[in-house]
Length: 205
Image 1 (cartoon, helix red, strand yellow):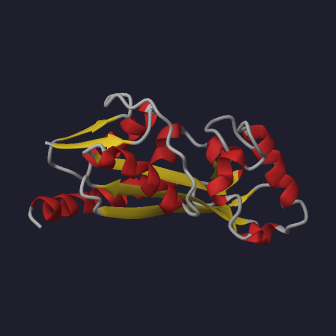
Image 2 (cartoon, helix red, strand yellow):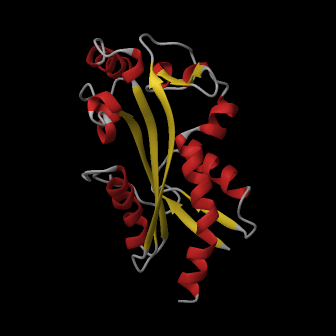
């Protein structure tokens, strides 16, 4: 059985990862959390990119002898040069505040015309093996930023992120629909497809 540790304490993330990976991987696997392995410390995310932060987090379980998995995600806005990016959760400062983040984003784009309000949700997933071999994949979902919040579902920037294919903001989408098209879902699908080869190469170098 393939056994991994997700560098998170978020059970929702684990359930989502298991659900999507199960569609692409025939081998038995198990995903544990940091709590499951008794790790109670914090992981300092001081990377300069989604990939660096994901690798920093995944390296913690790897340093303890596990296959570590981690993700880092956020919103990038074209007109803002990719901001808020890796600072998405704390865009308006600490402590994190979704409403304040959305208000700051709308203010920053107040004079930007609709045609230039393109944006992408980005998610990078990293896997680091106990010998520090690693792989990363990135999934994206493209859309644009609305001029006011719409919808009651989701969290973070979901009320402002309009998905043209669905003609709705992420906050207006049913969660099951969102889980199929989101940046995280796209990244997990890529990850699940290349994981078996990575593990085969690791076991039989």
